[in-house]
Amino acid sequence: MKTEKASVENSAQEAKIFKKISDEISERIKTLREMGISEIEINALISQNQELSRVTITKSHRIILRDFDFMEIKLEPLAKSVFLLFLAHPEGIYFKNLPEYKKELIKIYSRLSNRDDLGAIRKSIDFLTDPTSNSINEKCSRIKEAFRSRLDKVVAINYYITGPAAGLKRITLDRDLVEYE
Image 1: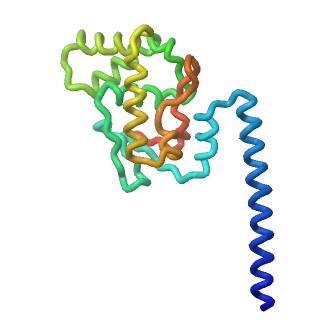
Image 2 (image 1 turned 30 degrees about the vertical axis):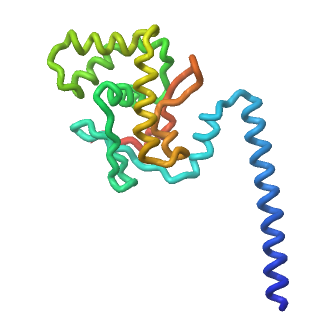
């Protein structure tokens, strides 16, 4: 009888502690929102407690999540070029500044695409970096969908390009988890 009473008391104590911590977390999240921190950034912060996988970019430019049973994330060459560009720039990139990255994108896309025509490659990159086109947003959506279709959304957010509208866009994944063959 004493053990049942102790068990009930322990459960009640645990429930009080859980409620207190839950309220504290809710209050801190509210404070972050008031400071202007986006939901994306808050979710990325929360997901830091989730197990993340190392990403290996193979010599053949495959994207492999090593710790998730060597899962491959498949992207078409132009979207993969955007992903690799942002992976190479942990500080982030403003979409409005993408024209400054044309040479780097051309170099990446040339390695990934089956195209031999440098003019066609440049035309694709020009369209991608054109501030009046929606191409960069479309590629980011494809990248996001590729990760979210294979991973829990709380984990996936670490692997795709995020950021506020007209703000700095970046992949939040810790670069210590990125390996290149």
